[in-house]
Image (cartoon, rainbow over all chains, first blue to last red; front, side, top):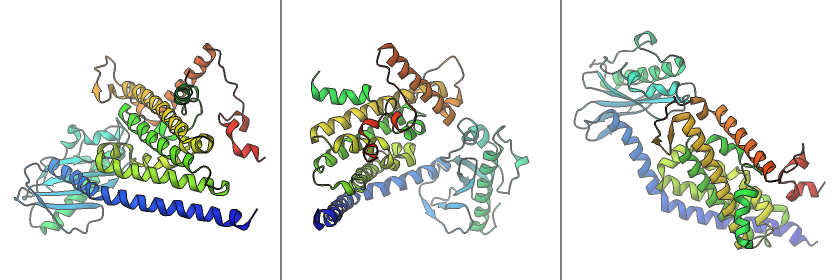
Length: 178
Length: 221
């Protein structure tokens, strides 16, 4: 067998395939990238508006609290939305918490999580969310809420996420509200 | 039966990838919590199977044996990446329900298995039909399994509430329930084999592998 077919051809063929593939992929990427970015933004906005439907648009704010993924102020003064996450049973449990300007919790939306279906996933149920709605933005402990039986870890994760959001709320409002 | 129809039919029944070749078990168990997820996964894998089958078959005389596996994987990964970008852009709901299992189609052994067993030895059209048949067989199995798990586990089918008289059994949408349903379906396949007099002998070890007759590792022993 010649040197060409033994050593060079395999390399040349593989290289050619990779070059062709690379060009093809960059083409598809250029075609789809703008749509993907728009989708991701729309998905994020959906959670913010679900938490605070009265808002018209949001302005992102700086926030240095660990576990807080986004802090936003409603442009029309309806309040604030802060998303935070804490580790649960099956990964991170993210929550979007809406605060009024006076520091009352208006709403909590549990975003997609991987908690056990039918057990920990109940943190998204209206009954559990009702634990938080209407409370002042003060740190909560497990005794304050009606945890889900059989899902203490998920309940605590949801509580921690809300507490992180409360901490972030005080940081961005400078502690003057609430 | 027409040769071409036979190739497609082969993948759906005789060599059903999930239940008779026992390939692609990971996505079979992981995404079938809902019938719609099974359908999405099945059709995604079908797309990759057909496209990679065509390209591998077209290049079968060009790719040297030494680098065939890296070449196949590159081709398969390309189509999976293209699929991923398209799904992310135009079907974001499917993307979030399939999650990490969408990129993992790259290592779905049905696809590499068919590239190695079929596409590298057959004509382009036949390879496309084999991909179609295998893909449909995989899709049907996933939809069947997803339907069973969704009906028993959530009381719905394709998201429609069936208003069953009994409480849904949540265990069916958890991983143990997946293994349970998979086992019952495999037993059902063996029952049908028995009934139709096509019982396939199953041995332990390499000889018992459903793909043993195509296996190149065996030849080199």
